[in-house]
Image 1 (spheres, helix red, strand yellow):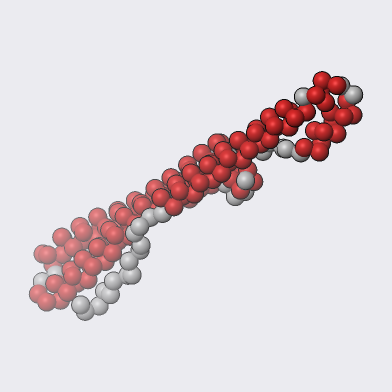
Image 2 (cartoon, rainbow, N blue to C red):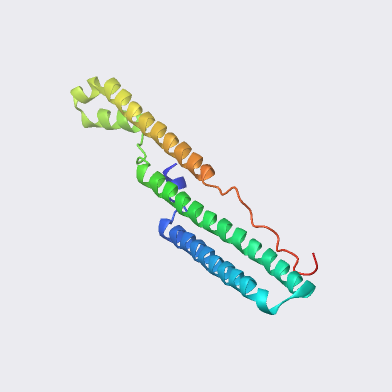
Amino acid sequence: MAAEVEAGNDPVAAGEVGARWDGLAKRLQESTAELAGLIASSQENWRGGAGDAARAALGRAAGWLSHSAAVSASVGRAVGAQADAAARARADMPPPVAYDPASVIRDAASSGNLLAMAGLADELAARRAEAEAARQKAIDVLRTRDAALRGHVPGETFPAAPSLGQA
């Protein structure tokens, strides 16, 4: 289970991916604002049906850009939150605790120490309990991580690009 939280878990790289999504969202927001400015300034120069049609097409494009910016920002936040969840899981994962009863028995027998032999049952029970506690903690860490990953999946999707021809 420890290998599962280590493999492919690079919070720095994931953070960079999230930052790129945030950057895309900002660029799309800037483009939306520029397009809105163009639409507003076109009132003077583009008149009549053609001007109205051009503004309508640009309005659809601006709406699409705005929605795409929101989805991009949501994806950026989700990637960051998922990276945090994965990093937390890696930090919280307990180290594996080996439980090999045969090895413990062999070691006690080969030591020649009668106290070690007499305490063997207690030693085995303690090691088994330690291994089981670590296993349960690892299971809890994976469940918590998986729930957090699922909880940070964005609900929005990118819309299809609008038709910019006649509406």
